[in-house]
Length: 308
Ligand SMILES: Cc1ncc(COP(=O)(O)O)c(C=O)c1O
Image 1 (cartoon, rainbow, N blue to C red):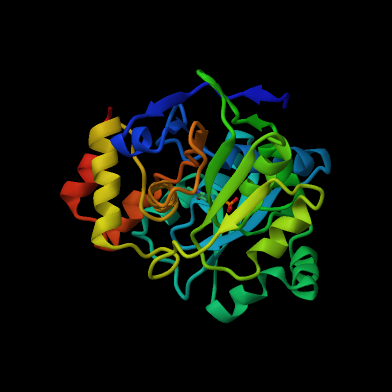
Image 2: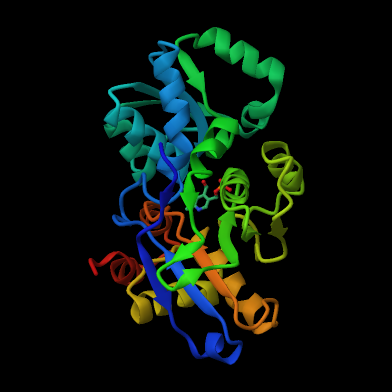
């Protein structure tokens, strides 16, 4: 992959930004409902390439039962005619879960893991055993965050907006690979990750992938009630954003990060005259899972997923 300037930009206008003399540019996927859109294709590009080069049959990875990363890995492997295995944090595979249905119809072999087993996912002895059990599969860590995943993200230039350079890049941060990759690939900008998982080990993980970069910051305190949880106010922000800007955000990653950004702007955290790029990292497949669990009404789901 060559370094590519981003080309799907939309300026987001709001009286709040005028008040603080800021410009906000959102980089959004061309096909927002494609499970590979946003950061997914970028993080999977090199792992799949290496798996092919090593003559592996496919990729093995991990995720929760509604994981965007599992859905993306299943699709990416299908596209490349590779096999995929998903180790899912669940006691039982639910045949009606829309994310798992997508994985299965894309050919992913799903294996349920109890919460206790799932906690072993970064343990090196456990991973060695897993690799012995599945020698024909390249193991990709949760969220696709690894040195290879980070390498793919470095190739996205998010500073060149249609109206000149931005000084700040903002993204949702979960397993940390996206923030690390953006920091390495956009050295002239300050990259701000909004922690949506409340993981105290996240800064150390990020440092390990970009030890030489000091242009990033992980902002904590905007996770609300925890990863995957959201309140009516956050959902309303997603609905209003869709109505005002024709861009769909979901409340687990991009909506939470956008809400945090509005709050940071309101607090005066950015110097006047700055331009900010916001990375829309995708993840809209997750909306179907929220509807399935009754966390999103049918009416709100229809508003958020209607074609623009
Ligand atoms: C939609 C969405 N946004 C942001 C992120 C966070 O990216 P990362 O895990 O690389 O920090 C994820 C997780 O991959 C995601 O699914």
